Each structure stands twice: as C-alpha cells, then as structure tokens.
Image (cartoon, rainbow, N blue to C red; front, side, top):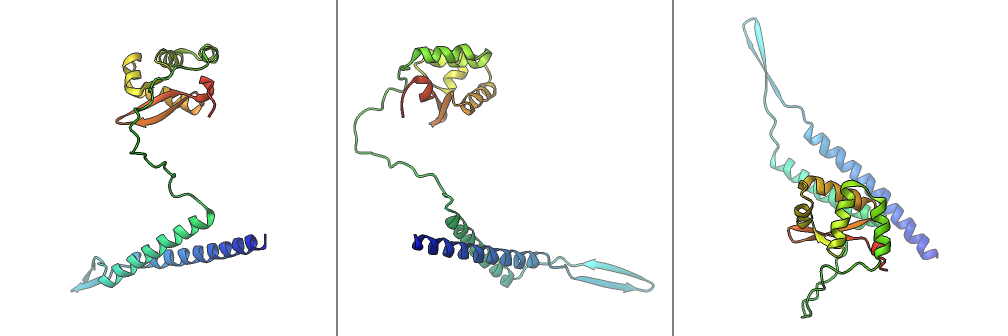
Length: 191
C-alpha cells in the first residue's frame, strides 16, 4: 500500500511537470511562429510606400522547432503513460503452424426461438436484413447482403450501423468486405 501511494505521487508529480514542460514548449513554438515580418519604408518625394518582406525561418529556427516537436511528443507519451491510456489494441498472435482448415464461416444459430422474438420486434428493412442473415446461418458478408437485399451500399451500411449500435449484429473486417454476424446473445451462445 505505501509503495502504491509513492508510485501515485511520483506519477502525479511527473504528470504535473510534464504538462508544465508541454505548455512551456508550446509557448516557445508559438512565439517563434508568430514573428512579425520585417517591413521596409520607401520614401519618394512626398509619398511613402510600406513593403513587407516575407519572413523565412533560419536553419536554427528549424532545429529548435524540431527539438520542440520531439520533446513535446515524449511529454505527451509520458502523460498517456501516467494516465494509463492504451496507445493501441493488443492483437492476438497469428498461429501459422496449424494446418487445420478455417471454421465454417456460417455456423447455425443455436437458439431459433430467441431469433424469432427479435424478428417480431424489428420492422421494415432491419427485419429483412436479419431474416436474410438467419437464412444464411447467422453470418453473411456485407457485399452478399447488399446483393440479397437489393438496397444501395449506403443504405445497408446505415442499417448495419444501427443494428450494431443496438448490439444485434457484430461486424468484423474480412478482406475487402465485412463479415456480419448475429450477436452471441441473440444466437444463445456464451462467450
């Protein structure tokens, strides 16, 4: 317990210092970028002309901005580390040694009564979509679904997005298309 408190205090202190450094670096970078362009005033008789000379960054400015960018990136990663924000989703390692064939992409639904209840609750295009999926064993590729429904790709995509949001179907990438499956809860399967 005391070790955890020390670790939290250390992380909190690092977080505060890192945010302070990030703010300071941002101020320096903004000041460098907002340098006023030099002007030249030409006087000819009774008139004068103000000519603004475009400002160009020097090599030194470019190096300073590069260092600011690198240190800012490290500061942001430190902040994410302290907040325990995952930078990417862990992936499952590919097993290339097995020679067993892929499982059947169209398993039969386990609980037809539960699917019938969902079909009665749905209306219109969503009901047609689920009916076609059930006819295909609960799984179908999105391009096949577009062809079966005779709807536009955009309409099928909207229907699937609504069904996925409500937890009725799941979508997974499969080559150039998506594999659409009835949710495990609807099939009656346990995870």
